[in-house]
Image 1 (spheres, rainbow, N blue to C red):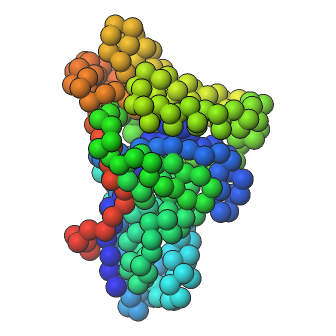
Image 2 (cartoon, one colour):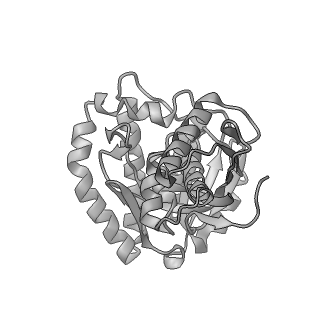
Image 3 (tube, rainbow, N blue to C red):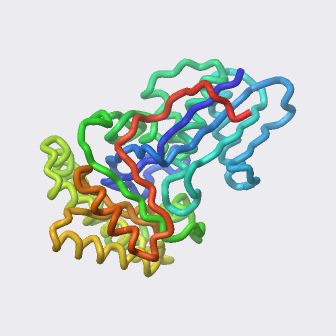
Length: 319
């Protein structure tokens, strides 16, 4: 049987860094994110006796490490469906992968939804989220709709996409792949002298952040996500060995966000494990931000996102 799914990437406002269980990808702390409307992975999966081995194509390229991760995930799906058939998987992103834009989140969410259906499974959203997490931790957040919280084994939607009219403008400064993957970087989290302090304080921060979502207090919301991004990278910078994902252009845009804010344009930044920056702004002010970014030569491309629905099946296959 053949099935195709599309899934959004997501931007974590409250980040997770470090795992209690590396194999099961159980996080050290909870996280809250928003699905992104224009960072999308499309994946088609077909299980069939005509395939003598698993055939994997990611963005029309061959990547042995990623292929092995996908085959491992297919094995989980096969086990759950009690089948032994090999599969063909074709997956395509509409944005750069390996640069810190959470392509593994959208990728494994799409693979999970398409793979489960192609294997004859009919799983609930909560089951799909738990299964996606075992491929890539943050993928569990790309299954539910809109604003999403991940606690423990899986994620659930806090609010639907249309709950709040905010925009995430992704400013791409480079399409170069990062030197150390998020998966490898996570293993270093506990080497930072500040990691334990972060874990001690994260529960209270999540409570405060959820309150800003409830009240739609954009100023408090922005202050928390900006501080959270800097805290996450402080852990990375002080791990052994240190992780430095930022480029000079990243820091320039951080400073510009602060400058624009002082001039009356209320915009806040957050950064994942990469060099590209996410600029969060209320929709009513987004055109003014885009206009400013067009004048910044370091910004190679912009991707404008609204809150989005999660992973879902579609009828148009990639093969």
